[in-house]
Length: 151
Ligand code: RB5
Image (cartoon, rainbow, N blue to C red; front, side):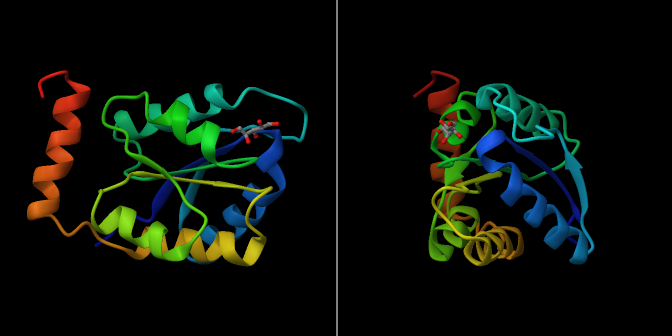
């Protein structure tokens, strides 16, 4: 059975949308670990990305969600962490395929880019998809080898 627990974080620009996403996940029976930020007061997105990534690296949750203005800064910061494969998505096909092919463990999107309806669809596509493994595992292993500077 799939883990029904997920870590989420946002900066000030993603705060309002994050609240909607949390409510949606809870309605779906998920335990949501919210690492902040907790208001629309300006903050620094790399700090939040770091908190979400630490939870994944430490095995607290398998997956994470990051919301900022565009989703891009969060994904850049998250992808600097070992073992993290973060994808900034604004379409549902990519949100699903990044799990199926890339075994992405962090979904990022932007409150200034996507509306609430699309954001919730992105989340559903991401969390409901399964990594396919096989040839995709080989490629994900190559990403890890780059990370370890072994390729
Ligand atoms: C904050 O203004 C904004 O730069 C941030 O939320 C994000 O979009 C960065 O990528």
